[in-house]
Amino acid sequence: MHPKKFFLVVALSLSFIGTTSTSTKAQSLSDLDGNAFLMHPRTGQFLGNVSSDRFDDQSICNPYGTYGSKYQEMSLWNKYGDYGSPYSNVSAYNSRAQYPPILYLKNGQALAVVSVSSKWEPVIHPGALLGVICGQR
Image (spheres, helix red, strand yellow):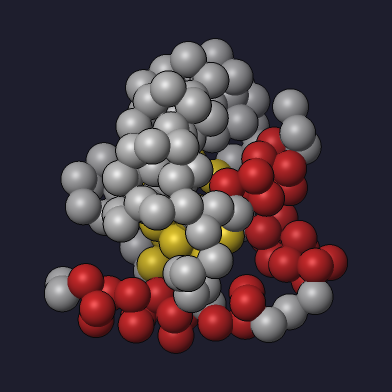
């Protein structure tokens, strides 16, 4: 899919994220627990399930798993890895990244860009995922 068309679909899919109150956003994020996953749109790399299950090998909340550890390369929480670095062009934590990760529903519907930058619409801050889904481990 063409990048502009893709982000238009994303914007239409979850446009309420940018216009709702903080408590509604938190409730919406908690509703994603076990029902969503992260993927990188450019590389196609799976980046973990949005799940509070700390024992699930594929959960972003498993501090010892591939996608939840602050030491694993595929984790958004690894500030030295491609997807968590403040310098990588594919990172959720680089405000200038051109290709941050995307949050998808289990059915494959794109919901939002996961980024520290507010230039994306709709956008979910990666810290919000950590806080709401993982409970700030």
